Image (cartoon, rainbow, N blue to C red; front, side, top):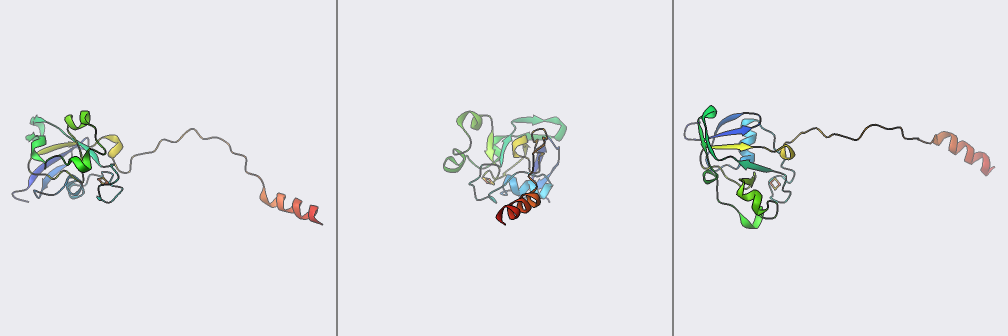
Length: 141
Ligand code: FES
């Protein structure tokens, strides 16, 4: 994919070049990284939050910058990302379009297929419905 933008996803380390102008969710699909996108990129669920890392990353030979994605969309992104997190580089994956090199951190909450830790198992008494209905029908006689 000549002329594409190099994108690296963390923590998986998966990377590749994607067409400039595609959003981060589209890029994640092309590269094989699962990011939650419950609303199907209609910009209403806020589950696709990722962080654009700033700086030079020697390991990936990438100069990542928030400037390398499309500008902040106040109307959509401010609903899900507060000012503090905006300053840290958080963006909605379905909104931010890739213009050049970026390193994207996918926070645990935004990873699709993440394991759900349930509470400890416990016994729940399930009434024997067959006995109950027999009992009832005897009472009805
Ligand atoms: S996929 Fe739902 S807001 Fe981005």
